[in-house]
Image (cartoon, rainbow, N blue to C red; front, side, top):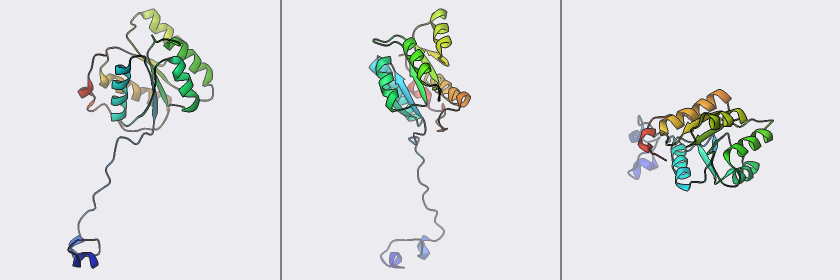
Length: 173
């Protein structure tokens, strides 16, 4: 009754009865799955990070394969998205290193590249990459491929990000 006397309404006062409490907002930043994004192009990494975070994924970044392996040693991501052409350790070397290190828990690898030759893509896939997306990419396609990899591999837990709204980030990177 104290709340009613003070002019406010609480659950015990007559003014508070019948009102539904505001449900806590669900935020996409539940970060149930972590994705390591590896690309030497800062703007490309930033676009991918913003897109993935908007769908509820936690994102770790690396500038090349060597930095990715250093990050991977401490933070085991649920998925790796990597370019092929990078300094120090390229995407092919990263694929080989990740597949050699992850015997107990195979991390899915998605290649995001401008390289379009059939031989290069075949080499990446036969080396251990699970899928690829060509640059420039449609954000809806990238999200759909990420979600498909999670469904196929069972890595991480579902965030419910979905492809809705991804069209607003359509960019040629």
